[in-house]
Image 1 (tube, rainbow, N blue to C red):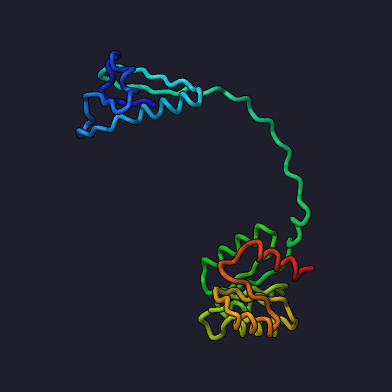
Image 2: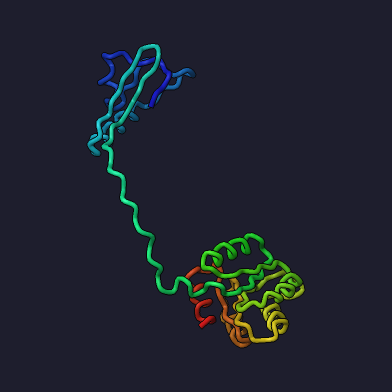
Length: 208
């Protein structure tokens, strides 16, 4: 590290590493530190076994350096072998419905990493239009604040698809009442915040 300060006379170069030792000349705005910084640096460098050097030119500035050993370059590693199940969700068509754009962005990013083909919709009309993509799984938020709410939206999407497409209701409401209502209509309830492992397990289960 090079600075352009007043420099340090040679007679003080050892003393500046002592605790609470402060050189007499303050900074440009008169600030003075506690005198601990260099002492701490030297202790750390000693523990690591890396010498700490200082050179200074009065009136021009100082240079502080720590010397570390050069390591041999690491050998390139072969690419990781594919783990069984990595492609389990690849190409699965999922429709996500949520009125929060940030939630949709997060779902798109997460599912995309798993190779899922994601369609997202923030409104009832957009969700019904997305049925043209022939979704294989429906993920619908409970509180859509539209003319339909979550469970009714799932029913409408199933009707539009013309088949009992597997679906899950996403909600922060984990009450037994809602769980029973969701199961009674043939859907799975996933509690927010959604755990990626739980979501992945659900998608893998409905695909098999």
